[in-house]
Image (cartoon, rainbow, N blue to C red):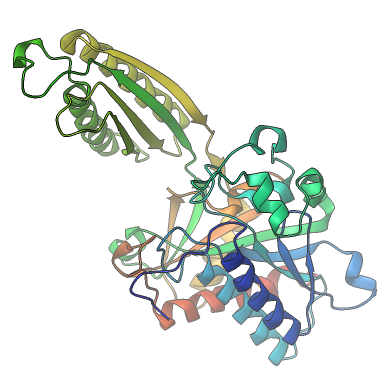
Length: 399
């Protein structure tokens, strides 16, 4: 069901917990055993027998939190298709040899706190609680306070980490959030890598002055100095994407202006720049180009420019054998697959650090995501269920 204003279920909010409680009710109705771990993740487990209960699980999963005013399919599609696959196998009397899990991760989005994929980071053992505990949302609530408001303990969240022998493999299904699958004439996509970002904070310091009395030739307008840098980021990324084997995207996605008053020349501008490609050397080269352009603008515009790296994440390669298997399982249904990279981060990138992991994309209409008009057809959701059913049949049986 779509809502004109979209959905807002922020990480560790009451709304996220309500959605996760619905997940719990549905999976318990399926006869699955459900537990909440120390990070707030819900793990619904199908144990085929007492003897098999200690074996590693074949896992599916995604998330139910959203951005502010988000759509109804980002994360949710992965959970729905996973539940659909389990339901279908249960109804047909399938007997797995390995346990099957559907994992609902907590707080995947970075819309409330400036950190993403908290639940899957904790499960994979890569959550740095000391570095994060004082991060605050826009109301001044710290991430530690938000976690503990949900009845969890920040001090014990590290115990959500699972050992390598607990999971056999992990697959996440997600809407593509783009149009590469559709434009290629394919039915679904399989990602081989996730393009993690380099993020820069660029501060341009000029000089405030009266808009009515300061002569044009004597101004040190920080916003005017920022303008060519903003254009450079967009134009250079487009150029490099045409020239290189792997695409790169770069966005000036955040801007703070001081004093932001109608009658005052902007004295300070802060830009947030997000750079992504699965080619890490290309990301590094682009960062250097931004720094070089900033030096040029600094000289030309008589301003001071400082560039800080706030995120520097190497891109993630997913399990190549699992990618081939997912491609073949979909094509066995007569479907056409596009092998591609993911430009967006997902929980699967953290799971891949410890377990064989794969990522399946289904189409979303017009590539729209993080928006109330986000939409995936029932046919594409059904297609996703079919792929996951085939994956579970193959992966959860011996031989």
